Image (tube, rainbow, N blue to C red):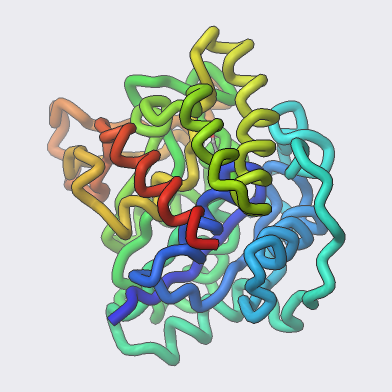
Length: 311
Ligand code: RIB
Ligand code: CA
C-alpha cells in the first residue's frame, strides 16, 4: 500500500528534484502539491509546481496555491540562489494544467479530515506557513496526521540565511514554532544533513546521462543551483536539500539522527528562526523531533538517479 503524502513546497530547483523523486517512486501516493511563498513569490511557486508536473507528464497531479506571505513577518525570498523564476537553469514551457480552485490550506484540512487517522504524511519543503495556518484553523487535524517530514533548520551547520537561521525556518519562524509545538511526530532534515549530499560533477553528469528530458532538466537545474553554494562555501557542489525529505520516506535507512528537543527562536532578531536543537540533551525539555545528522550520500544519489530515470 503506497504511503499517502502531501508535498508543501516553494519551487526552487531542489524542490523540483524532490517532487520528481516522489513522482518516480511507486511507494508514494502523492495526494496533492500545496504551494507556499518562499524561494520566490506565490504566483511563481504555484506556476513552477505545475511546470515540474508537466515535465514529468503528470498533469493529473492536483496543485494548490496557499499562503502568499508568512504569518507575521514580511516575505523574504531567495532569487539570489534560485534565479528570478525560481527554476532558472533551463527554459521550460509555461504550464497548461490549471491550479485547483481550492486554497491549499483548505485542501490540507479537508484531506486530513477525509482520510483515516494516521493515513497522511505532510512533507513541507519550504516555509511552514501553510501547515501552521491549517493547524491554527483546524486543530482537530493534528492527531490525525501520521508524521511531518520537513526540510528546515540547522544545528552544527549553523544558518544559511542569517548566521543563526536556515531559510525555511527564518522566513516564517512563528509558523515553525506552531509546527514544532504541535505534538505531531516530526522528522527534520536540517542543513546538518543536506550539506552532506552535495551535487558533485559526477552526480550531475549521471542525471544528464539518463538521456531523458527530465534527466536533462535536473542536470541543468543543479548546474545552475550549485554555483551559489560553491562560491559561498568553496564546496565541490551544492546541497540538494529538499529531496532528502522524499528519500527518507522511501529509504529511511539512508539517514541517521537523534530524537531530541528542538525549539524555535522567535524573540531575538539576532537569532530569529534558529532551531535550538538539544543534541546533547543538556536540558529537561521533552523530545519533539527526530533531528537528522548523517546521510549516506552515495545511496541517496543512487536512489535519486534511478527513480528520476523512470520518468
Ligand atoms: O535552506 C534550504 C531550503 O530553502 C530549501 O528548501 C530551499 O528550497 C529553500 O526553500
Ligand atoms: Ca524549498
